[in-house]
Image (cartoon, one colour):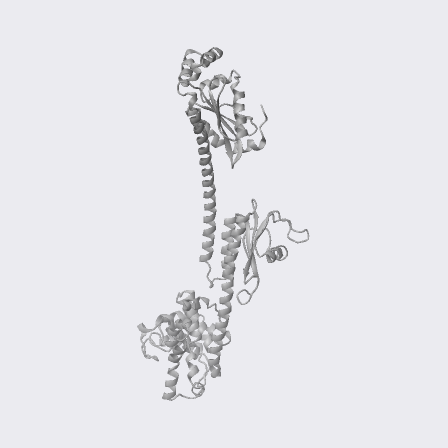
Length: 552
């Protein structure tokens, strides 16, 4: 027997399931099938789909050699062929193609009625010593078909083979599609999750930690690290975020980034993969990295950091590079937006502080008053359980509550003695003037209630409108209480600062009339000493959330 070719055997072995189903289907039609490789070598013996073939096989009948001749004819012509074998059976053979390449040949045989007419059955009965029952079964098998049907069965064998190959291909494609869909779903879920968490009010460390955790799970790696370079005011110093166990400390991760990865990423600007990473002996990285994948975080074509995946069981591929690059692009969008909003917030807060400082500068006795009122208002808003965004809005209301005093003459603001009725009326206009100034700035409309109503009282005896408790916004009541506390505890042109004991007594006395009772109770439970004199510390606020609410 000719030795089969290795490549052909590999192709046929990959089709084992397909060929097995083919042989089973042909056996149901009473036909046996053998498989031959592209060198005309028999891979599997006749399956013995009928008793006749099993008995003939024991005779070493010449039909086996004739079957091999059939195979050679198919190999030479790449077309299906049929013939009558010396035993009287009809032999048919079709090529087995794999991706248009000849992988082998399928051969089938079946007895025909001509075997009876030509005496083949009688000769086989004598040669095989068939019993009467076996002889009858052989005769019955021969009577089922005629030799002239060979072309029909040749088409049937060829169609069944192609059908089974198509089914196998479809199953394989379906399996691959299912795997790809599953991977794509995970990737889309990751991208959607990251997109949903892109809020400029979120700290970069929090955002990047979420990105690293999600990416580590999808990539199935030991660890994922994110590095963001310092860029004040948004990022004061380098950020290194780690998910998993990289077996490297923060310093080593920064060293890996700077010495091994940054030059590659800067050069190409795309993700890079090293499935056989070897750190230089003097690098200080040791041998804890087997493979890695990295993508730059880039804004305006300038690197601002990178994402790194470390140590995966198996190699990283182009699909991983595409995914990591997509995640890095999204992360870079968030970081760039965060930088822009930080710059904008820095600018706006600088302008607001300059405005309030200009008001306070008109009266040296009220220097720092707006800052203190803002800080006290913030603490009160927190005590009321406000959301972070609303707390920030109350803070800005406190900071800007006296902006209307820009229109009050300094002679009135700084007057050491008692004000006349006309001068007091001028003072009483500053809440309305402040609201008028701010109503032209759409993004700061949310501070107007606090500015306009910070001198209103629950009992209706306040100004400028004389509103009662149920008509007053809580922001106005908060800023009003903070304003009164700081005014009483500060030196003024007409009196010295009152003691904390006197101030707290005044607040208790007027709770429910001048001050909201619930607010007064919450306020008295706070550390009031921290708001006075040298104990006061300015509040560092991230007002992006408040401003975003104003921009909606």
